[in-house]
Image 1 (cartoon, rainbow, N blue to C red):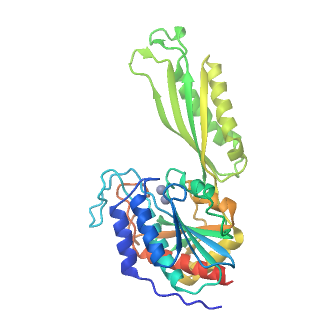
Image 2 (image 1 turned 180 degrees about the vertical axis):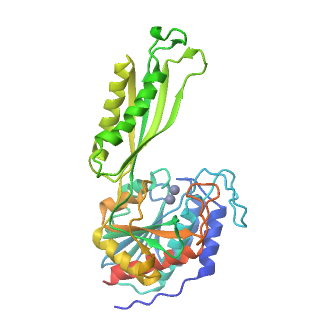
Length: 384
Ligand SMILES: [Zn+2]
Ligand SMILES: [Zn+2]
């Protein structure tokens, strides 16, 4: 079956992205964004439900046949924008520094095009809050976004400044990492810096523990399984001549699944307890799982890859694009098969600012590529 799509309204696409860029909203506070999304989806002929998982918006069109879910995340970051552009953030300390403004603009344009087409099957859009705080996907799933009608496959994308505009990264298997957080309180006994024998020094315990935690990566991890552990916060003490009573460490473990992911909570806790007890101290460990590894389905990746090849040509479809960053689209893809693609958004031939930086920006030609990719993926999936 051949399904015709209307052309992309490039001006509206860019205008929407710039409007959202000027009005960034943090996770679970996306009220202006979700109002705009709900209005546009309604205008494009979708049955709209708001407040799905806090500020999430769901739009459904069609009935029967296969049901495809297209997901776009809506939240911004607590970053002060340093770009001097006409569409600079109007809200101090908030910025769309990850490209989610573009994801929403792409999603709305895809919705408009698919809304105007006569499609076999059902299209469901999930405009998701709070990706950056790993909350939104799970909240929407708990609120039933994958049911009524039941979703058969899910697709999404991330604008990606590690790739030049005009390229798309797609591969099957794990492409984004699990994100775990640990917080360790080391309890020793404070005292005089000149009399360490009368104390249990939590600063020294911290130093040994940081090294021991890195040894989990070098000695306890299967070298064929990817894994990263970073200790990112260390705090203790308040004077040069006082050994403090406690110290705090905080950090993260990232994996693509496998044994290290399964065992990380126990490994971190056992290591902390063992090291502390060797020096006479004790610990309390809090371990929190934020997101799971994002795993692309083999067949759905193949489908999306074929579509990408049509759009940008085989030489511009990249494999091997993966990151130890996390993404809560992983929860949708753990429930239904699907694929998450990286759409190159760096201006060609010059270095792009990284995601989450105050000078992050995208080459807006990437928006059209994103629209084509999701629109044609939906048509291909439903029409197949
Ligand atoms: Zn981000
Ligand atoms: Zn992001």
